[in-house]
Length: 206
Image (cartoon, rainbow, N blue to C red; front, side, top):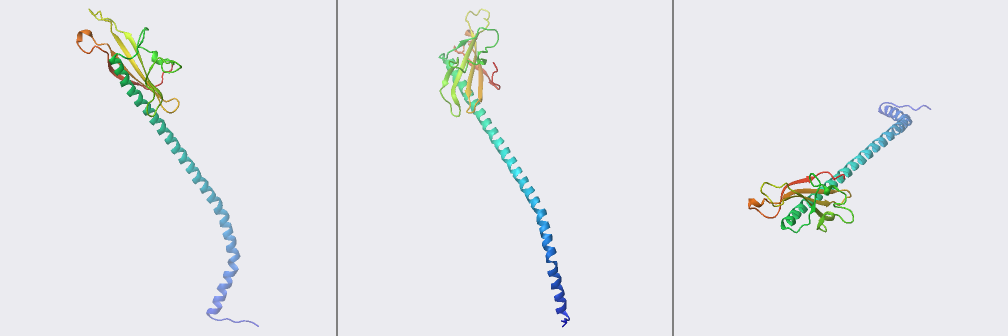
């Protein structure tokens, strides 16, 4: 027996039949697309992870750099403050002074035993300083000035060196000032006054 169809019913049946017959093709196409999409997703995920790791490394380096810069600045401020205290002690005549008898500018502060070792030559200004480790020390070296005409009073020039340590290993700072004994004929102060100032940027190599 042959089923007959006419009009819209016949067209609807043909469309339904074509759609059903295309299901295996669509399923195969979806499987193919899924196979291509997975590697792309994995590649993008790996790329995002690499970017995240790079950003984390950059942030860590920036944090360490900021910490080291802050440590150097703290040591610098401590040494600068120690230089003020050291110059006051010299002006008051209560600071210990180490004579320098060799030619040229006093340079004992460059030696490793000036501020370190078991018995450093520098004296302690403060046993501790906020944000630093170790004691805040100062070394005063003196050298005789060439005598002036009709001047029988022996005068000296002094090199003051203050030293401070940071929190991190290897962080240290030096600050220096120069002082002179006053000219007796000038009628000025009778105790040496610090003049000039400089910061030692590099750690002495000696």
